[in-house]
Length: 328
Image 1 (cartoon, rainbow, N blue to C red):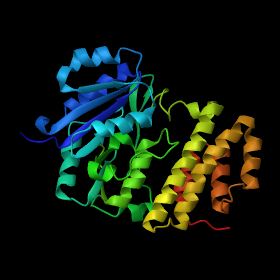
Image 2: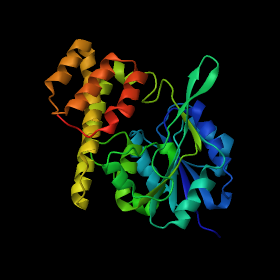
Image 3: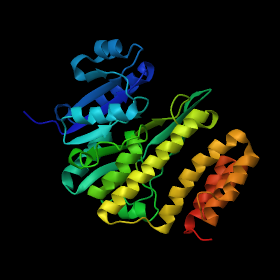
């Protein structure tokens, strides 16, 4: 009997209405069925998830229910339950196109030194007429196996989305468990840290759909309206930075000035959103006080984020400020 080559891992919490689309897309993969498994970790759902999964999928899906512990606890438990050589995460509100696994798994088979394969996704945002493609993630790094860590430390983007990655499990095990205090951003953590343990392949072809909606982290601006969510987000960014800095020290690596600026921008952006609770003027004053000791270009970018429409601010960041290393 052939062993399981790839495990599809879906974690979910009270998303019964969306979950079936994710599972259906995993079952519809054109990768050989006997070489894959689908594992669903239910993080204490109180809706009809258990009944629907059992009735609709039976033994085609390995369903495991656990007490609610949060997304990272569910992911970490799920990783331990997978039996494949590779783990392909799929968020319960996203879906894959049929060729996702057949496009990614062979790259891990062919290149034993590759720790992860990431790929582009089509981003869908609902409107009055249904799901509309908003934009792609637009990967910029080379598709050939490359030193993703060098790219990232240099300041180049290495996108991190659960539904757009397949991990080599042996590499994944080297970066787990998640650091204490990290309750979200498991996809970002895994992507950043697995780069220390192998090369990466990045496919620019969209192999699935990323769904932006009101109940996920980036949909509807929830984090902009909730002070508690902002405080939590700030703590998570700080934990992520501390964990990455520690990994760099362990491996004798150091981020470039450009990467350090980007990290400060991320931390500054969360702080600005928190200050916005007091008004735009208070947020601008916080930027000018420069409590995070950000370089001039980083402060300019944060001020642009405050006073320009999002698309304009992003354009300036990518086309102008993003071309420079920090300078005062």
